[in-house]
Figure 1 (spheres, helix red, strand yellow):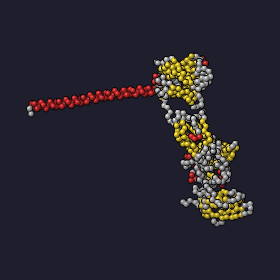
Figure 2: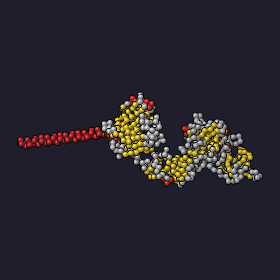
Figure 3: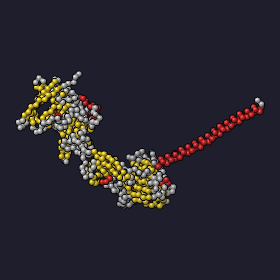
Figure 4: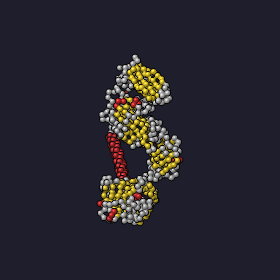
Length: 628
């Protein structure tokens, strides 16, 4: 290869390398340049965000004085030595007559909401008043509220000040702050310059007190919030301030929400919303009750402006589930609730026959408490408020004062220690409990009852008497064993209407159906045998039931039981007075309270009445046992 070719080859190699380096360096420089621009923009963005957040934080000014001073959290300037924080409230505490001002820096949003609690322990006057100001001392512009002037017509006044010229923009209710005012208020400004002053003078609700339009001062020009008190020597410590906040205002654009219905009585409902209601044009057409029930009147109470009372033409039925539909209900900003529904029911006061004693535990396990069970033997909701539970044996009583209700055919177990009942007896999930004081019940005997005041008269709804001997004889230890009612059709006063609860459910059924419950009577003008095959002392069919039903009361009966060899094993009674309807039970024990042997037994039933009519019937039953 010649010199020219070698030179040419090296030249292109050098040129290629130089070009590559030049391109690489150019790319690197371009990348660094772009990175620098992006970084600067990112830093600028962060700086802007920080400033924005700082501005936002300043605008979210709030102080409830729970920190106990004027320096923690919100920092106050001015004559702070003339004020103290006492029990979480800011109070003037000046040394002598004069005026005192404190302030804090803030940023006022274009749309804002100023809230505050104020109290003056005196009647304000031209010599004793205070001002709340949003101002900018640099350009002498401000809005301020003045509390106190002269005479009995004192009202909250709102002014603007521009270059020393004060202009009254609006006044609140005349005379509302003339006597020791104690109130809270909210002043709102929309971004179009529309102001509204809401004040609660003690009713519990803020009402519109004044409104006006002014856009001469831009809120963003204002940078100070201040409290200025003017006072004589006797008022140096009688100004109070609390819960001050200045926040961005977001107008209410949401319709009111229906939150519930309270049944006052069978003809009066209280309907509650989550905010104050516009009562203009309210009528019965705004409310519909199903099942259809006529509404005669709608009442609006300005002291409770988020509630409406409905007066009904017809009484509510405690057997129904009702639905209330509300239509076209508006709030104070005219936001419209087109339609909403809520379910409710009416729980009636119990009348005779509605509530029954169902079960009682009078000898609880060590560490536990007694319980008594009540049954709603009616097809409707029953209110237990005011129900008295007593024990005639010792004269003690306890009254249920809470608003407690029982559904139709529902049980309720009442005890001073519900958790112990649940842990010990493992009730079904739907069991119903109430923790409440009970009168003491003796382990040997007692006489529980339930009473209620109806129309000024105290009536006994149900009662029973118990002794420890009522428990099934074959249970060795009756501690923790309840007595359960067998039938709600038969009086609780009849001793044979109660039987020991089954071991199968841990010896008690608190808050749900009794283990020994009989639903109906199967006799038809005479006797009928139920549980003809039974096993004494065992969980299923523990006793024989002899139902009876007669057209006329006053029937007497002799009932005797014989074994298959014809020997009498149990005399259940002679001249037993039977009612129109009821039952007798045989627990499988003989006259010596010993369990009879397995086998077939004959029941001889002899009846006679006052008219001289006599009849004898023979039935059989089988006493069984569980096979090993």
